Image 1 (cartoon, one colour):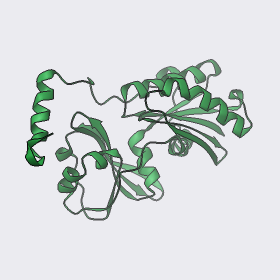
Image 2 (image 1 turned 90 degrees about the vertical axis):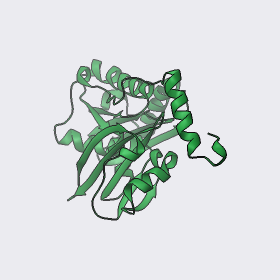
Image 3 (image 1 turned 135 degrees about the vertical axis):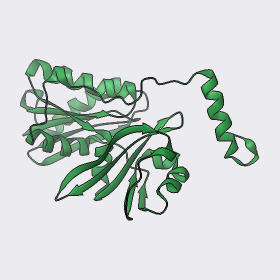
Image 4 (image 1 turned 45 degrees about the vertical axis):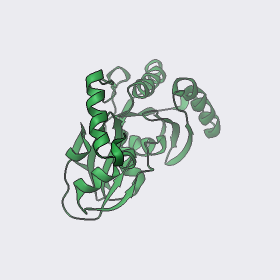
Length: 239
């Protein structure tokens, strides 16, 4: 099977091809330029793989959580490529993608959601398959789901931004932290191919991003409260 994977949920922009088990990938730090970069990257990757769009059998995309704009871009491009060709589409969790990238078996995935919050989920790998021990949610760092036992791996940008709060929350249960891991199309392709084989693909018009937040900005009063709260944790009272 030939599957194209797209991932634009963070400042990184990546594409990947699953070609009957072989994976080709491209990735750049795009900042805010995903909409200009994504389709040229797809064209270049298809050239790398020696195939055209007509040779694809499915398309996968990072469905979220993540940047509102980024999720819409990946979903929209996936639908746009799939719809005229009647290709199935697979939405893959970005939190599951960074768990896959960790190569661990007990993983807490945590992405920075800005404005003092994180996107978080808990996964366990059993006999080669992932089980979601806690579904993705949006919460404060000191409200993330607790885990039992030790040796968990913490992954994602949430640990880079809120490392101290999360370390306190997990209280010694983390054996390692990989805050450098981010959602990538390579893992979206691996998981998407697996999910497609399990019958979890949908029609293009049914593909949807996973939004966990109803709004993306704070009010002026909320920003002031957040700034005041941060200043309490900084020596000298400066945020």
